[in-house]
Length: 115
View 1 (cartoon, rainbow, N blue to C red):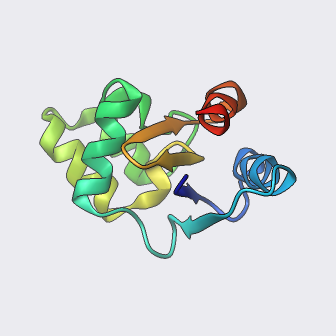
View 2 (cartoon, rainbow, N blue to C red):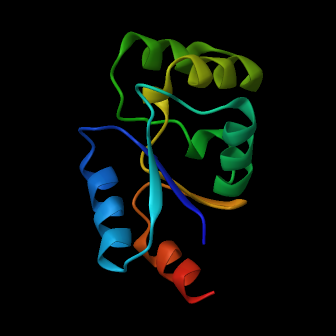
């Protein structure tokens, strides 16, 4: 199992995801979206695993970039904006190889631990 948690330092759901894996003794890699962000390939993989671009966008973000994101017409333009500003991505994003879950999804993570 190769777990990566993409999150934000002040996000409670990210902290709960970290706690979930710590409690089960599963090692993970934490990536702060504000500092590092995702690569284009990682973002594409997460979008396809999560069920589309809208599932990855943080609809609770109230920044100027988040407002602008709603008015961008093409998916490519939205993806570029997400790559520029990682804080626009809904957190936590938990990846297990090619699989990914966006948001707090302990039921999905539990299935991964049993595989």
